[in-house]
Image 1 (spheres, each protein chain N blue to C red):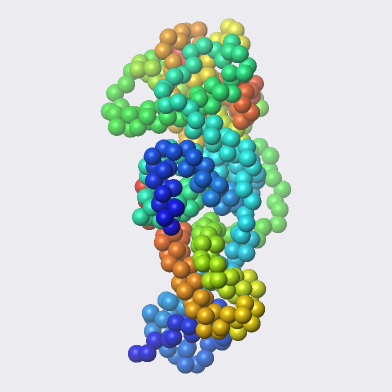
Image 2 (image 1 turned 90 degrees about the horizontal axis):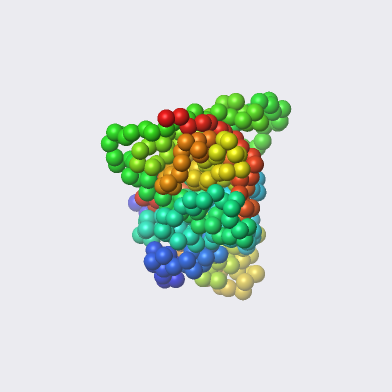
Length: 192
Length: 231
């Protein structure tokens, strides 16, 4: 993750191009989280904007030792989105119209779990190509180890070790960056 | 005690093979293997549910343009003194972006200073903000102007906006004369600097408006709260 360290350093030095790079790299995930949490386009775009502006003004608080840049940005976005949901709830209470009760929606996915999924998906995308491919076949296509060996032409033993190591990598990243540890990895950026 | 083989744990976590009685027996008595299996299962579930996260689309380009506009402003705290409408139209987007960022910076600084300062301050004027007829009646706020040129503004129950809330000082005798003071942050209280040299007897009507992000720095015409400053 050398390029990420370098990006963090450039960002801390106030290089606006570094913010653009971070936006290109992580903007889609931040925007996805905002959309899932807020459910409407305008608010999601606002929160995405607020997140990167806050990241810029609070760039001194990003500490790569505490977690990745993605986790830091998602932590900011989650707080911005939750602030907005609370403000909306306040407005709803004072709204004069009584909204018709619609059927209760499905249990919404918790923000923490969405963050966890984004972090794990990001790590999956960073794995060495062959490791990633075997895991994708296991996760997304539900193939067994022997089936993966047949599809990829890799020896069964190689498939096994790819999956075991790949899973270990995903797990490590999740433990460092996951929302369950968000209060730890977000650290001083909580004020943003 | 012989722990479960790491490859075996992976197969169990992926539900590729069913738990044999030998596995179950060991797991019942071994917290380490149990935790290991739990973690692997959780991560596997998270990864398997990440199918839709591959190749996420980028946010619309306008989002980046707004970010760029907000961070591109010079750091010097220059707050426009003249009413905005007297400015050439082409300048408006540039100045709006600059002012927004400056106010954001100045606001942060002001809040920091306020937090670490004893609360002995002289209020030179105050106003109670009332909602306009189109705004929910629970909305409101209050304004205090301090002798050091800061304006402390508290608002509550403002309608949500997809843009931002901006504070103005208006001449009630000529409603076309107004001065933009700054944007309200996403919290109920804000400290905004009042530009020096403003005749507060003339510009005594405080106005909070709902402004779209349209690059037009003039008042949107959608006022939410108003109140008159009195000494």
